[in-house]
Image (cartoon, rainbow, N blue to C red; front, top):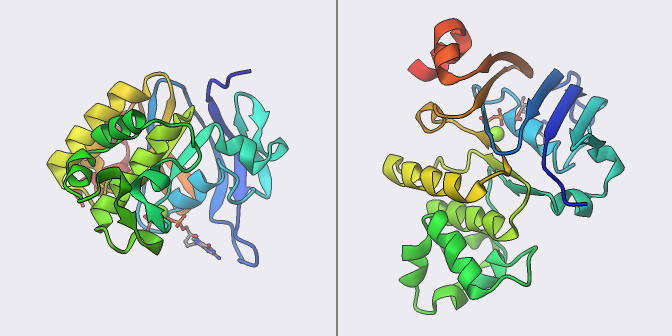
Length: 242
Ligand code: DGT
Ligand code: MG
């Protein structure tokens, strides 16, 4: 059955193996299809740890992460990956070509699909300027393209896979403000009824999110819209002002 992509955390507590204290403490929230959930918080707050639990990079010690009511712990990583597209904070490209990197996980994608994903990810121009276009070589780790280009290729890769759940971990930080704004607008048009979860350093890029979760030291200390949080959440106000 095709997944809808409703993501739910139920009282999730998680600590890294061998660490003394958990990095996430009793986290509960729901991220709905067709909506954007943003996660903000200072460095080390636990944002990456939180979203990495969704594709099962780690499993929580307590509580449950569910997709469409099914605990992800009952699914294989491959099954979760067919529903969830993670653009990680350290975007990774492997040795090959631009096309092979973009097709990772969806070998059947056509060149048109790749160009469409690049258009949305604001990577179309720089790929067109490459001597071999989509067939231009990428070195191991993507060291022959810039950090911002790496980010855009990894965003495009996620778009090519057309997941039900998009996870963007600080994926727009290397983009200038106007590119960020254009990308977010194009993204809104193509993600449609998928579930979008965005970890953001730059609050200005997520003020229009349907729901914002404020994470501090592994705990959700606030949730609401930008307007609501500015009004009543001190931690959020500090992040906005910083
Ligand atoms: P950021 O990306 O700098 O804004 O920070 P967050 O909010 O993404 O924080 P996160 O989840 O990377 O780290 C939360 C805490 O967990 C922090 O004290 C560092 C620790 N931590 C992160 N990754 C690992 C890991 O792989 N192993 C261990 N033992 N600790 C980790
Ligand atoms: Mg992080």
